[in-house]
Image (tube, rainbow over all chains, first blue to last red; front, side, top):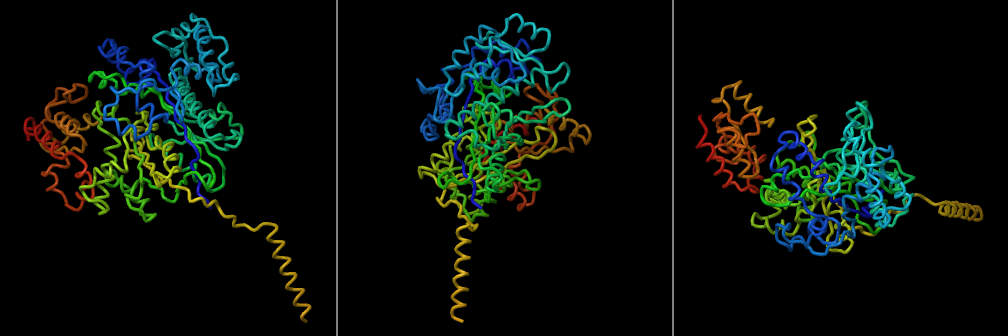
Length: 512
Length: 105
């Protein structure tokens, strides 16, 4: 059986400053506990403009206009080193402004729960008509909009979640049920954000991969949201909901969950489905979350920084049958943190990194690049969480020292060569392992890199169902160009065999 | 917050003199903060130990006092790798400082 390949990846961000204020859980918690706090009073002055978010180097790396090498060449912090005149669009995707995104939420809403004002609708209609990937049929779903008075009434009388742009009320998300907490306006809002950002990532992927949408047979969605009602809270399924708007009419799908580790779980599952010939093309996709916007906002503001968690993330990865060209997913070299692994960092790194390498007779240094939790240190360092990717690389290197594959003095050299700086927003699953997949495809195809390891980790204990933590990893490597050999026998071959047997038989008869 | 609650409950149940807190925080500042919380009280005044000075004995897993009192093989297996990764000296300094100032036992 031939291994599956990673064909293509897309990455999108949505700049969402108003959602930082109104929907980020740090801010909504503060509103409940300290409604008059200085933080809330001054929060608007700490938010970045759309241009500032676009010119931010880590964001430009995320959408592929800049590379991890560019990031390494620029000393941290990056917040004070804007890349002036940067572009909204990159080779991997785009950074969408908040107003267009609110329009996209309306477009992907099939239950008429998003209500936008007439004025706002007409302003975004024009902008979205100019968007390459959002066709006229999709734009027509915006309709004409509502009177602002009706929107206000829904917010004041029926618990609708208000939608703001540039500090102005522009619409709302209605609750989908009078008393069902799982269909409340808040939950519907978060789910529509996840769906809309997932759809945007899927649309970019289809364009980038240049694939006929009809050829995608299965979608695995791997965000951290749950959709369902009071009788089945996490019933699902975002995958099919996203597939519908991405025009994947021959696809079904399902949702994979595992906190931040879910994307790596999803890629491993997709690779197995393709290798087993269940499906030829599987799309792994995820949108982002609003709850994590401004999660460390208080620390950023305290240190005189802008609130850097002002973007929602999304990505999509296409896993396909072996084309003899694209990088191979080695699902025989999968690492997993098992129930019995234990929680010491040493046990974790052994299970995720060295266990799969041992299976392939590989050393730690045989992997050219490790894609770990690629959180942007500009965000995590001021919040006291340190440089997350660097801490991961140190642990991998230290394990290499313990195994005698590296000398203790080579730790920094190892990090420099096999590691990268983090560039992804702290959206949980978004920075986990997958941000490098797009670059990995390019680096492997161009011959700069041979093998990479994608490592995803997840804090399962946050859900209070287990004290365990989780993680999985997988190796991706250069395609050796050998497509699967056809082990079966063709009709022509059978005919040849029969003819040969008949000739032998005839010759035998003649001899007699 | 949940951890503060558990530490408080355990200290009440078994007596503060019978409790040792072993920290595993990866950063000196965070480890120092945790040490301060279980000795002098929560300096951020956010959790159940705000204004509660338990004065517990507190050590970080990389401190020599802890290292010497456990099986070296187990230590090497569980912590050996992290000992290489962490800034052990500054962690030890922070935690020791808090312990010497505020620990009552």
